[in-house]
Image (cartoon, rainbow, N blue to C red):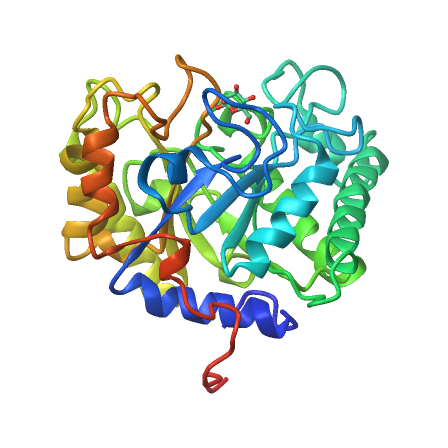
Length: 353
Ligand code: BMA
């Protein structure tokens, strides 16, 4: 059951089908995959560094809304109009779109500007509340346009992943910059505003802290089962140089058990090793956890961060030393790419309420 009881048919189908798929497979995801690669940045209708390397496109495509409502492109120079076209195309081809939001500080600066207590000021009654509503309205407008632009369907689900990595304190919504009550209130307010006021019934809601110690830590700012569909984890820490594979496994197993006991999805919502210094990283670090461990492999997808430049990329690209290993990884029967997905938006049998 989705957190939003009025979720659209396709959204409910996506949730249900992902829960089923998660038992045996892990979908491969990549941020900004269609927008650019390490060595290209151009309008290509459907090109990714991933397909350049292994002939297959990701199953999950990540996008970021940072700078929405301010400029016509996002914080990483992806034009919102182009993003919309790509999102429709992803959906049309049976892939999945997920959206994060490096939202600017409402007083000054960026998502990383932590000089003020921003969360308190954007909640109802706060001095920047109206500005926050304007931001959410801009997003709702984007989603309406996304759906209106297609004649094939007006039901394009998005996995929405706001206020991520809040167990750290590098964003203004992070741990040190708001109380637990404020974080939860912000999440719940946002949920009600976008679903009840703006009628966005095509969202699955993903909660995605950075690394955590135990269940108590993970759930400390959890908004509640009525507000979340996906229990996510952003983990770069355990998979980078100096990280501990055993900790990666431990956290993923905990995540899966927390999600399954609630009837939710688990997902590795962000991961990667910057510039992939270990050429065997794919089969030695990632695969053993997300495909081979009987519990950790029950996450629904793993999303690698963006391929920006030779010193800042998380997926492979032609010529990179990890390409042969990535090809082996990509051939694993449990790692799913877009072509492996089948009618993910078709509702099978509705579960009993
Ligand atoms: C970070 C980096 C930044 C980028 C931001 C938002 O991890 O990739 O360069 O601006 O994410 O996408």
